[in-house]
Length: 400
Ligand SMILES: Cc1ncc(COP(=O)(O)O)c(C=O)c1O
Image (cartoon, rainbow, N blue to C red; front, side, top):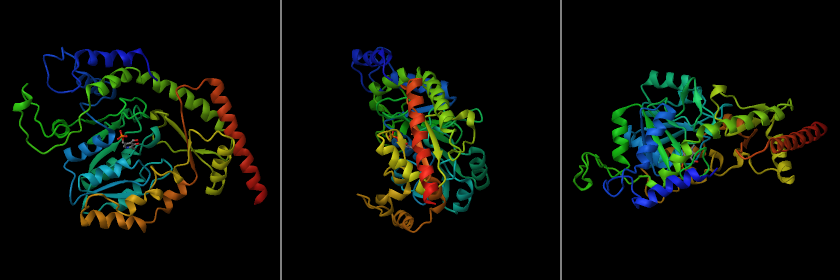
């Protein structure tokens, strides 16, 4: 959703011509969009500190570096996520340890517990498709084994768990503001944390290790190595307008989600994703299950035939989101040399048993919730999905 608000914020930056978030104190005439957006994120989501980055992927990488995750460490993460989650782990030299998801579509705490080794440094839940992981169970494991908790909340802006926004519960958490997220900067991301030391490290890491002390950028010190993961003022300006509208977006999402769920719930064979805190669902998607893979595949094929598949995602066959299709990872197809430890760990994914995740993902369809739907469109969409599903269920009954 785009409005004059975004244009106004971007124009403020264009008028000064200072597109960079640091320095140029005089000519920028008091316009600091990135800083303002960081403050707005802290205020809206209840985080003590926020560091903007150039993407959600950069935010995860930054958080890992700031938390001291690197060579020799293992990070436990789910087999259902976006490729960025393991890219970030590999980029800091650590090993991604992929484990099963359950009907929450996020980490199965029991699978996590079984995967803990002496090398485990961090558990990284991914709050997929607008909803959240079982944070109490994961926090308990972190406490028991003294592990870090890093939340990949890139897909769940505005979701909460027992009164706390996801991304602010662990040692650090990230959002993505890429073009398809609840609010966008075009490209961008953020690391949130309540730990000052972690924040200072994120702040420096995203800007070549600069300490950001004083107001002479050329004289700043570099207490540690960093990268350029800076967001630009133009991107931050878009995000600043968007965050002011996030409550409107979330309430439309929730309303549309409830209306569609009511219609889908008419089919007794449809069950819904387990949500650890129903109240906290940000409702970007409605994820539903059918009784078997065969029926699910037939429903997906029928939705396609009817021309209504768009917006309904069958992640089991998707190239981006599920271990099954991550051949580049499983073959360790890296352009640069990975460490022996990393190579060995990811090659063994070819043999690893993900049947528990397969049993969940092969029966799951996620329908994305649009902010633009009218009540009539939701009714039409829901009724078409229900008709297609009933037809497939009937014919599978006959075949049986
Ligand atoms: C779960 C998850 N993590 C990380 C990212 C990376 O975010 P970005 O696209 O901003 O790099 C995404 C983006 O879709 C995501 O879905």
